[in-house]
Length: 416
Image (cartoon, rainbow, N blue to C red; front, side, top):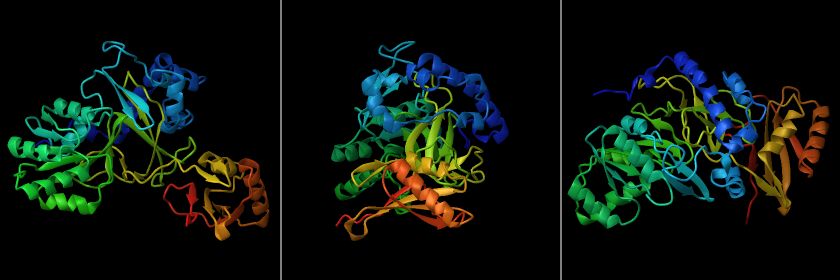
């Protein structure tokens, strides 16, 4: 059996990097020429010069959390899409909605969301029957997996969500090879099958997404002969990364460039440090997202996957990057923590901790510095007051001692 979807997965990493930065200037230029919002946001950017990761890091991040208001102001899609209504050369095939609401186009290209690669890594092959239990209405998850499965040559049963008993009956009658959906719903289906005595032993593989997938649940499926693998995808970007039989992190998809940045900033963090997942699509003419901040936390893993795929790996979903909190009736944002740190070159990393001893909100900026001189404290406290318009304290730590969990603001207040 072929182990890899195509030769792109096993390229020399340097060859991949060259290919990415040969393509990227054209993608940035396309976004600026055909998506009005990017034309405005990237004004002054020389697309032809975006040929290195350092040059890309100078391009501003557009965050998913901004899209709700931006899409209200400019329809459709806030001006970030290069497509509109009417399926054809310049129109979207479908439009979907995510919570917010945020609206996303689906173009007509085969495997538009690039899920075929993730399905292949999970063991799906041409001729398989896929029981697709992702939603088919409003949100794009059902279409994302279906179009990927069709690209592989699979037949799809569009089960959607709910109707548990009917889904179990369909599994018993059709004997699908595999499942796509959330891991929790697969567990519900298996339990319902046990109760009813329906035979669902044909299921031998699964691709799951949309929620956490703990090892205990993975092992439960494995004990029933189902090898389940994760896909990390979003409605805006399609597939970002996917699990392989090596089960060591998630391999980055070949159609995207992934960066990990410090939350609230445009700045990439060192390999291994937790930060926000920022994605640039490399070949999407309809929705050419450049440096799109997902709001998810993860980290780049060192080395390469034992499965033979040579692209970078991420640790998977590790929480949310938007840690904005309200202190004494005022919002404090990760970008403000970054602004304070930038005023003081001696600060290597900063983490704002909010607690409420004696039922009074308190802010303490924990900073990593090599020199704990008292003069630093006075200046940093002044910057806290200047940037946030509130009083705060400072606590010093040696370099490398703050937790590596991506948190820029930690809310430790007790609510009782």
